[in-house]
Image 1 (tube, rainbow, N blue to C red):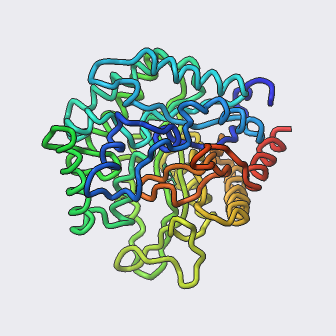
Image 2: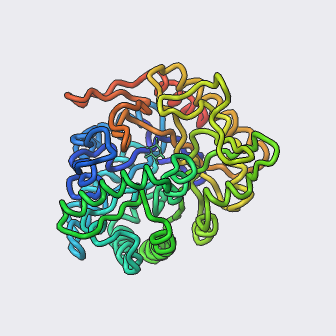
Length: 410
Ligand code: FCB
């Protein structure tokens, strides 16, 4: 194990995880409801996930042992505020123990307040479609800041705040087929919750929710800063957007992808860049990957070079220090993960050599985990997890990135 926390200003090398994807039995969250709804868009329910709610110490030891000096993870609002206005001291204590475990292992903790999940009661009252969602989210941020802020190295509000926009440009989430499927799932979730509505961050009605969600983000930044003046950031899903044909309107496409979220980074101390691939734009909109291009296990193009573009885009448009808070690949061939990491890090180093202020790299993900609608079918982990015993087995890529992380610091 490394001794001591990274020094201020030291580059952060870590892995990224999300509460719902690894903790298990997150029964009070909105995702638990939609995973069990009929019909559902989910391949399978999250169930025990990686049982990290109980194994967080083992996970921290694993990450530190591999050579990392930082760890990105999420806390679960549904556990901390199981009923509106009722905050669980025991859940807050639990996350204090997780943070202390990180620190004991020399891992600087970067904490996500909401990695897409919200309490089921919050979804069942209309989520961010309700104007008072702003105050509810800020109240949660305030409680978290007061109790846990002093243990964090940094916090971020929403994971990939613009995810609804990515879904719209990538999966035509506003199209009639997808809308019908998600509406049916939410109708079932509403019924199961004894409500006439159910609103999620992952499949949002942007016209009704985006403005409130941006205001909630700003209010949460203020609440966290007032409670404990720690660095606070915003993470965005940022894919390289390339013109692949004459007449491609990259500017319009970029506006569609980010909307007002670029401005929402203003009150933040840093931005989190989350990049997986590139999007090619033609004269009539998005184009598929080039013929014969290698695809990852998640279907998108194997294109680690995208990280160079997105870091530069973030530097130019957001003018804040940058952490790469997610970057990775779904694959059953771990050698391709090693190749992806090397190519992505070469881009990161080039950006730094050009004077861009990149302060950390968090690989998605530490563990093979619950990948939302894809269930357990996509393997993004540096470490394999046995689905019955929860035993963790590092893959060669884990040692590879761990070695890079530790040798960069010596
Ligand atoms: C990102 C999400 C993360 C994970 C990766 C593969 O969009 O933030 O939770 O699912 O994709």
